Length: 511
Image (tube, rainbow, N blue to C red):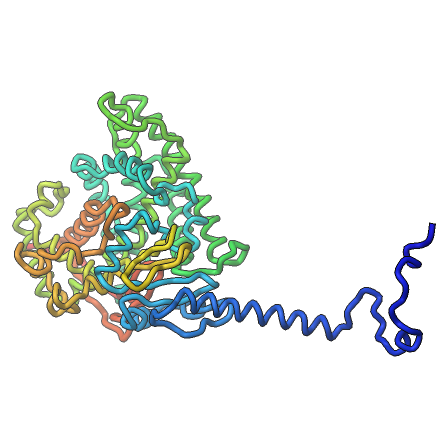
């Protein structure tokens, strides 16, 4: 048989062969360079074309920085940067790591996003599912989410809140005693940002898990939880590799889940032994064991731990932010603090050691108005990212592409001058008149969101901040050391004053 080489006659003459470059199946090195450059250039052109197609007429950069987009800006977000974006239009567009993002700045668009489960679902931040776990209940949608949430609502009834209130009061007094002891040694003003977070973390863990987590376990969760906080930026490096914030957060979540699963197991054992509920997990198990309860009854330790972890995620930094700004606002507005104290004197009747009850809290409308106002002026959460599950016709002339992030702003709704005259002013009185524009426009009060994923623990969060500030008003004196950074906002998942709110504490003397 003839060789295969003979089957294909040469197409080059001997002279042509001598003059032609050697081929041998390999392109010259220069050809590889031009081919690679052409491919890269094509991809960059495609990236810009897709961005401009999605953006259409929305305000925003005409071109996106190749590959990373606005990643550099998202590394250190500022309120000034957000305000600039919001002020550019009711809807505006940016891109980060080829994630197309539509920002919504008006109350109308914010509520439309929050109330359109057919088109969008909460994704919190891009890395949230990696950190909180993709099968966590917070990511459920539709009927499954409604039914799951209905069961969890039982954990925030008035009866349950009464159980939690006593735990909160005990831990708050414990921390105030610690703060005063430290202030006696060094009376200089110190930032309360981290100490307030520690108070909130222990309060949350004891309310949720009782004493089923040992002291060293609670400390481990508290110490490592900060890694979760700093990883929950709007956009983070997308790969969870060692050395990244997301990787560190995942390790912190694993450590926390170990202890939370133990607490779930111990709670089941305690209720089975006939003990009355003393924390949220035990209250949950007791409800599930009630013959009259209609709903799903079987939850694994892991699933219960995921729920508690989601509550920690939702409450820890948001309540810390609200509490810190509450201290700062009261210090900066002594006339408001005086009214809070006057109300406390009336309700407590001079007995400052008596634990607070829900009935006593009901008699403190000015305190509640003050908390509501501090959360409005400096909302802990300014936005909650959603992801479109299909093309979302958000307006008559624009449809958000499927798979995009769409982010409603809460800040503008809470600072609408038509609803909140002098919106930057701290005026608790605006909430005392039932006919005020603040009270007659509840759709603008988006501190806790809206729609099917509205915060499930509104009353718990309000109660916790109110109780701490109420106890502080009667037990502490505090002076705010105002710095150039006091009114500057630091955005770390939630809002904090850049100087950490520096307070000088001392015990309050009573006649």
